[in-house]
Image 1 (cartoon, rainbow, N blue to C red):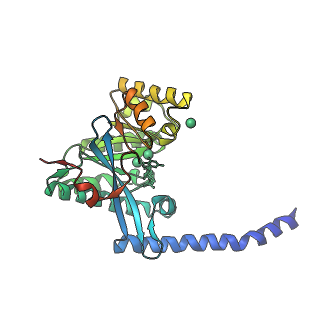
Image 2 (image 1 turned 60 degrees about the vertical axis):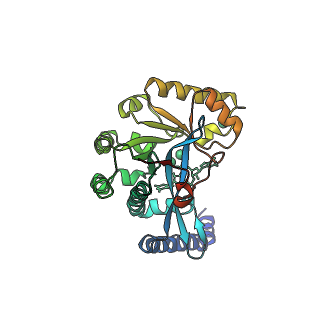
Image 3 (image 1 turned 30 degrees about the vertical axis):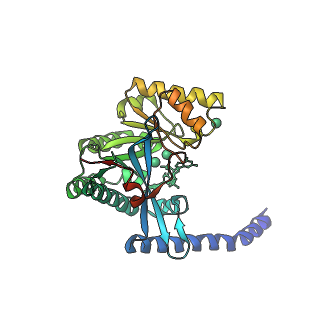
Length: 277
Ligand code: C2E
Ligand code: CA
Ligand code: CA
Ligand code: CA
C-alpha cells in the first residue's frame, strides 16, 4: 500500500504543481486586473414579461483579459473566493454599479433598480456596511435603487450576524433578493424572518418547464409561498416562449433570460431603459 501510495504521489505531483502554478498565476493576474481596470460589468434586464418593459437590471462581472479575451465569472470568481480577492472584486462591483446608476440618471434614464451579486465572505466583511453607506452618499443612490442579491446559503448560515447585516442593509434603503432560490437549504422560518423583497427561482427549475411535471409543481409552490409572504418572484434562465408562457399563466411576470436579452454592456442597454425622471 505504501508503495502504491508513493507511486500515486509521484504520479500526481507534476499535475498538482501545474494546477497550483496556474492558480497562483491567475491570482497575480487578477490583482493586476482589479488595479488596472480590466474588470467590466455587463447588465442583463429583468422584464415584466407581460408588457415587455424592463423593471430592473442585474450587474454581472466580466474580466477583459489582455490575452485570453472576455472571461466569465465562472472562470475567476471561484479563485477569487479562495484567495480572498472576492471582497475587492465585490467592492469594485458595488462602486461600478452605483456609478452606472448615477450615469444613467444623468442621461435621463432609469434601470428601476440595479442588482449586484454579493459573495458570502463580502457579506460577512465588517466593512461592508460602511462601504455601502459611503457609496450611497457619494453617488446619491435612492431607496430601492440598489438591490443586493444573496444566495440562501449566504444568508441562512450564521443567522445571528446575518440578521444584523440584513437589518443594516435594509436601514440603508437597499432592496434584498434571495438568489438561486431552491438550490440551497431554505428554511421557511428564515424566509419569514428575512422578508426579502425578491426571490429569484434558480434556472434549474425553469429549464424543463413546462414538460417536467415536478418542476411545474415546484415553481407553482414557490409562487404560492412568495405570494403569501408578499415577496416578488423573478424566474431566471427563461430561454423559450413555452417557459415564458407557463410562468405568465402561473402569474410569474418578472422574468430574466436569453429569450429577452443576454447580459450586455451598459451603453447597449441605455436606449431601452425607461426615461427618467
Ligand atoms: P447568477 O447570479 O445566477 O447570474 C445569472 C447567470 O445566468 C449569469 O451568468 C447569466 O449570464 C446567466 N443567464 C442569464 N440568463 C440565462 C439564460 O436564459 N440561460 C442560461 N443558460 N444562462 C442565463 P454569468 O454572468 O456567467 O454569471 C455566473 C455567476 O457568477 C452568477 O450567477 C453569480 O453567481 C456570479 N457572479 C456574477 N457577477 C458577480 C459579481 O459581481 N460578484 C459575485 N460575487 N458573483 C458574481
Ligand atoms: Ca444573481
Ligand atoms: Ca441566480
Ligand atoms: Ca428538473
